[in-house]
Image 1 (tube, helix red, strand yellow):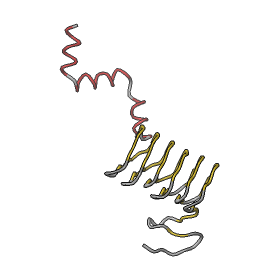
Image 2 (tube, one colour):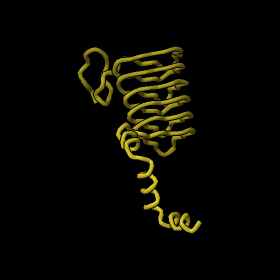
Image 3 (spheres, helix red, strand yellow):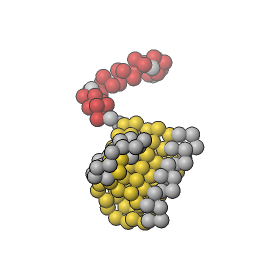
Length: 151
């Protein structure tokens, strides 16, 4: 999909693509970017962007990555924080994912952990007293409740 070019290229999702780390390029350090980033080369360090972050099939990241949406089709080792994370079919991911939504395509490799706690879910969980949480578990597990009563 083509879009109007203003202050940077427009990627397929309509977001402005400010930064591209090209194939054959190695970047080490900390990077903060307004809008979107695409990595076709190698990135080592910390990267924060306000838009989408794409790691292409030729891209590699050994880093702490933060963005609105993160699309991985290359190699990533590290920690990822985003609203939405997608591991495409060629993705090789080792590390931890913190996201509201995670999509893993067939063929992707994912070694690590994923935490999908939304802020709303955290607030609801904290607001309920422990007794209410226990009562709900007991209500949903009648066999466990009967066994506890016997002991």
